[in-house]
Amino acid sequence: KIPLLIDTDPGVDDALALLMAFNAPRHEVVGLTIAAGNVGLQYTVANALKLCEVAGVDVPVFAGCAAPLLHPARDAAYVHGRDGFGDINYAEATRRAEAEHAALAILRLSHEHAGRLLLVALGPLTNIALALKLDPTLPERVARCVVMGGAVTAHGNITPAAEFNIAFDPEAAHIVFEAFAHIDLADWEAVIAHGLLHDEVLRWFQVDSERARFYESISRKTREWSADRRGDYWHSADGLAMAYALEPEGALEVVERPVAVELDGRLTRGATVVDWQRQDGRADNAAILLRYDQPRFEALIQAALAAG
Ligand code: BDR
Ligand code: CA
Image 1 (cartoon, rainbow, N blue to C red):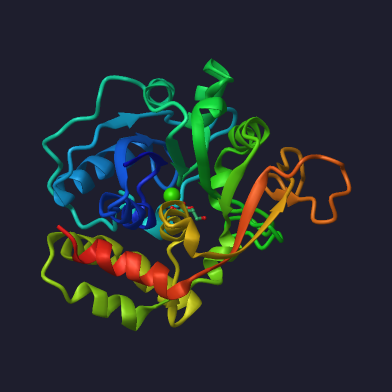
Image 2: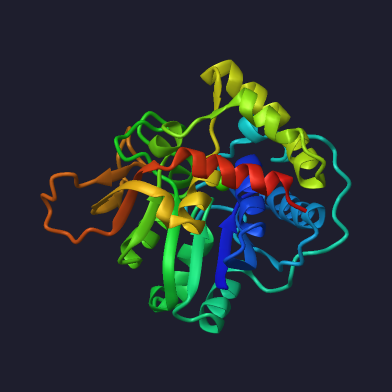
């Protein structure tokens, strides 16, 4: 099986992506490294542990950085709930996080699975950036790196030009985009192009499964929030990135270009700047997902909810 390491900040859409990963027949999740992002680290860690408990999977959870490298955190609790899981007041998981720091776990697992590791980043890139600073040879051992982040034509979701995961910690994103020669990128604009009909999603919940019941309840608030703003379609950013990671054959249109992260812009800090015309002479470092097989994406989600 392909060893899969997920860096994540759960987060409602992270949770869906994790359920997809737990259900993947060709992959084995070897660890969850947890970032601060959607909400504070104490919540994202607790949410990861709870999701593992609900799903009945025994995957080690490693707590990572509690704040961006340089600047104060600006969370997304208004989307995901104060606790990041829709404020349903779930009973805390009995399991605890491992003692090892997420950045160290990334490095150790990269050695244990050298040349085979699939690294998927679903949150701000702080832990991976820290791992890279500790050991810049990390990319040599990663077979493939998939990132959910960015807005390739500057239709941001947190500022006019920037997407949340990158804008939360632009310096970390810069480090990661400089270090990896190739990143498979699922950006916010791809997410918007792959909406899920609310009515369909409700139908997927009509299944006798603990995973579906839990997911229905933690996602309720954010689905209502999204229906108010974006109408008939709901969007799962991390779910789309996970589909691209698990079944890359489903990617129908991908474009390779150099991508850099803006660190200084007055209006554009945290933007992912794509050199569409290849004017700088830099090598392409990202395979940007433009179109994914929508029925395949939806089938992965439906199966993930029904499992367990
Ligand atoms: C990304 O930001 C977070 O709020 C989501 O979990 C996703 O990873 C979308 O911009
Ligand atoms: Ca996320």
